[in-house]
Length: 213
Image (tube, rainbow, N blue to C red):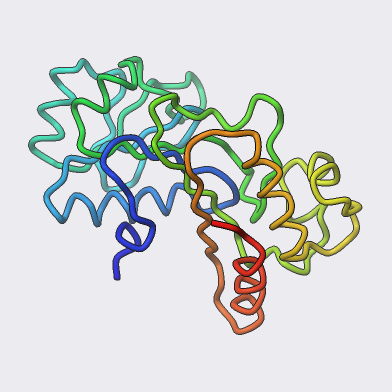
């Protein structure tokens, strides 16, 4: 089964947040949806690097973006961030982006490549039109110290009671996820990646057993 079907990605705006691997997930979901015939836009509300091998439009007009989506089906669009090589959010309002593309897949926070993420008050930067949130968790971080595995480890303490040197457990991540989700917003689905051995799979199952979604 494709990931887009497994995660039940719906037409409209989907935000992807959490641990490392968000950009790769956007690429995989976008490719699957485009191959099925949809027009798919990849973008961000924070900062991302352009996608290798894709058309990356910088500061496009609505007309240029519409033509690119018609011709390519899968494109990235954003505004250039001077001196970084990165893109930030497109200047075109999200409502218009959603009208131009069948699916708008948005990377809505950063994690500095860490498997887990605790969000500051200004994070994640969710588009108001988002109809679902995919929260990524990296199974490679289970068992590692909080200070190594979590982006913003000092905030993770408030969510889980784990000290910086404590190993990250599925139970602690489940508690943190539920506290953050309780703040409200679109429906959340948790996607565990990096589960590449039996131990990681076992931890992923422990996490899933403790989540209500």
